[in-house]
Image (cartoon, rainbow, N blue to C red; front, top):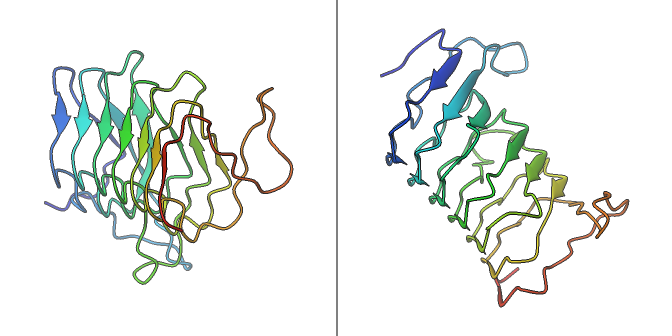
Length: 193
């Protein structure tokens, strides 16, 4: 199941789900630089027809650099641990159709790896996001930007555990200069820690 020299994976239109563990550590590049960083990366393109990315679909896909979505995505759910331990992906643009981020959806295993590269998690003001699951961004130490938009109803336990300083945007869409986590007025449940 291990494949070398894969640069891009384009999933075909008509697929409605990306199954549990489908790409879990399956496409691994063994060549690393002197710091242990993968020299080659893989981009994934998700078709409009996908409605759910199931649990651990891309778990341990350590050389995933980018996830692209087509023009009119239908994605509603990103399952538990779907992008767990994707170490080199620096930013993620959440499709407006996504309503739920599962537990550990973008977390990483700090005991196994030094750090992940996720710095920006982009949520537009038109997003349908309602739920950010438990530990969704746990230990994403590099994360500096996330827009917690109005409409979010639940943020789970330790959703932002151990991530350091987060920046958000003000009502004019400008980045706030100081670390702040502005909670949406629609929030009904805020998890522990």
